[in-house]
Length: 255
Ligand SMILES: C[C@@H](N)C(=O)N[C@H](C)C(=O)O
Ligand SMILES: [Zn+2]
Image 1: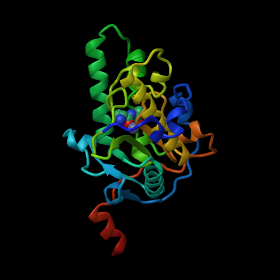
Image 2: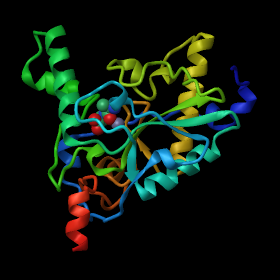
Image 3: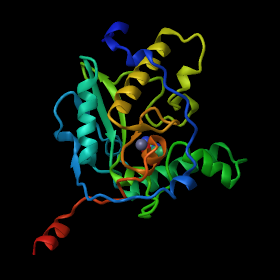
């Protein structure tokens, strides 16, 4: 289904600004005042929110078949979806992530880059991997963003539920995934111009609800974690690492 330019509105006409990559060492020093806000399942959200737990669908070991997020993140994502033009839906691909999945993603990308570039030294390998996967960390002072339930990976779909072409694939580990990549190209063909406009639409709809974006990934947004503290200019983060409630922990609290 093709949506007309005028239908996409002013967000799609407003460029994505260029932002510098984060310095992860500086981020880890930002204070966290942890809230006990619960993790809630995105799949209970009404239309136009859609949920496709990408890592569980890919069979990644330890991945959960649901996208859990903190309650404030849930409410904000619902508001984002409701603010999109008619006929466009918000697809949530990942939210809270178990440490094991973060480790699997990190190790897999690290090994893949190492195989393709045996000449890279350790520091370069780490830098290239970090561009697309954060270092796995359960440290209460410096958790990986997705372990907090504040980070989300999202995209857009049309009224038929088909994901829109955003100019690179979700998790594509290439410069084309940088949020402002299409802003920097001249002479875009029709396909790339539409992808640029969809990225802009997603970016401004998310920012209007208080999310911040990771500049190396058009799909990754944060609320309440240390990336959000940095890019949003906040005094402190709201979320530390968290875990899903188990039946054992629930009963232990109740008895
Ligand atoms: C793996 C990718 N979807 C993602 O979320 N990357 C960021 C950098 C992360 O792992 O926190
Ligand atoms: Zn992410």
